[in-house]
Length: 192
Image 1: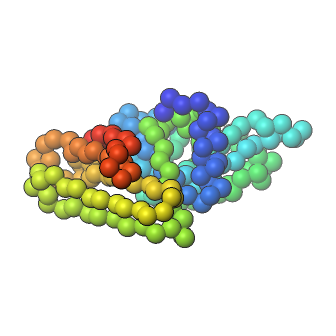
Image 2 (image 1 turned 30 degrees about the vertical axis):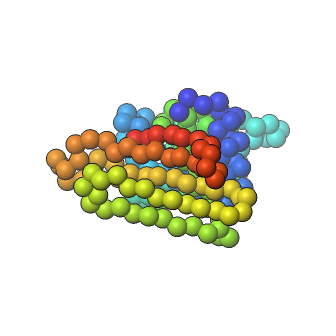
């Protein structure tokens, strides 16, 4: 990620406040022993303060869904920076092999390729469409709303590594158009 630290922190803070789902993904090159091209969840944010109340560090609590503790960067479970006073400021659990770890904001934007916010609330209506074995045929899905409201649409493709070797030779592509009546408001394309 090449984002402003404060912008990332504030965006994620807002998402956590709203109980949205948050995920991050490592790139194809690894830092701190994190598996490459792997998804994680963001569990929380914590500020560490010194004895006079001054903020010294901003940490994210991230979890590997494999329940394996492999992170070996700054603020790992065995880092000598963890004093009793600092441990008391966060939900610290040492060497539990639960997949959870703390990572400082400056390392977070280096170690993870991107973050994703799942704008989901219990009161929302939601649905999905899944296409299996499309044989290369283009598909179209229409969503209609009759009232002014936020509408979140996302598309996700299976990564090439999810297919047997030799079955997926090209990237999947997609396009998203937003219309109001007969007027196209926006258009974007994307690939997996």
